[in-house]
Image (cartoon, rainbow, N blue to C red; front, side, top):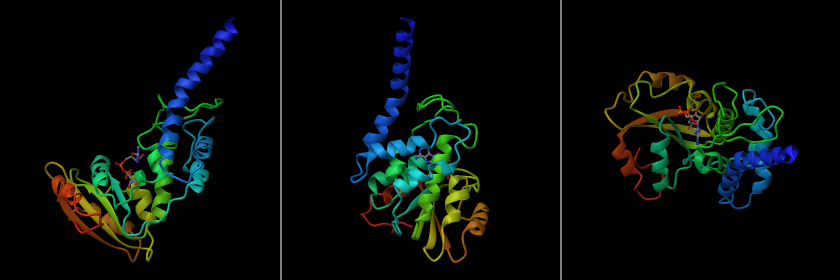
Length: 246
Ligand code: APR
């Protein structure tokens, strides 16, 4: 009868909306040996399922971070801001650097969207609004970035964009979360690589780097190297060692 049809519709909608995200999560997770991916999915879901999508704080992901903690990779950690595509291409060729997107948690959720709804046990992957600060996706990236930066050590690299007038943005995740968590003497130095694609709008003398220095913990030095996109990419075809280009 009507109820049967309704149930069928509800089940179909649930499957269509939820499964693709879970499938992607598990498929990407299984590339990392030694993790219980079904369990990680369930811990992940508990952060936002059944909640108002404007009310998922970054702490909601604490159990997920605890279930798949980040491991330090001294001298090899790479951060970025406004340069995701550039860094992604670079990383494919230059395997030695580690970005958040190459870690288990970063890679399973890279470029995905998800949210729950009050009174529902479903995960939606479309029509997730991101207007409010505590949305499930934004909170995840803030939480994961904090944990990733917490394990930073040695010489740390960040790739910033020379195509904008203010390459260091104190309100970005890099400026507001990651940079503040670098601690001396664990972290020795910050190497800024300022990459311009077209006509450079900023260089290493940019006043925003004074703000950066103020936020950088005492005892950590910083350096800055300007590069064009092609210089940066050529750098990526160098041998599997980190750093000789900057
Ligand atoms: N996939 C989808 N969205 C992402 C991803 C990702 N892999 N990483 C970050 N985001 C979201 C975040 O909400 C982030 O604020 O996209 C935004 C990118 O904004 P930018 O201003 O370009 O960069 P920033 O805010 O500084 O964030 C990038 O945080 O993700 C970490 O380690 C990463 O250093 C990097 C920084």
